[in-house]
Image (cartoon, rainbow, N blue to C red; front, side, top):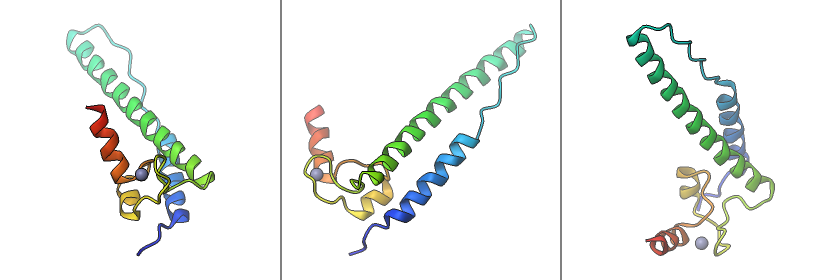
Length: 110
Ligand SMILES: [Zn+2]
């Protein structure tokens, strides 16, 4: 079975984090009074807000994954303590539960 290459994962996460932090959101230009301009500005504002939220969420996931790597808990299920399948960690790098526990907790929520 393939072992999860945590160092490679960590490098990838750090890289992605840098890209996210370096990618600044272009400032929304002030409206100039024109109706069409106002609408365009509102739309651009909404778009950059959405982008900011998305980036924040991504960053939080990356930070969480990095913290788990630092704590030596990366790739280990928070619920049952068993190792999470490497394929799952590759598909969902910020996963904190194995597929069985994830399925159970989703069933419980419903
Ligand atoms: Zn589990």
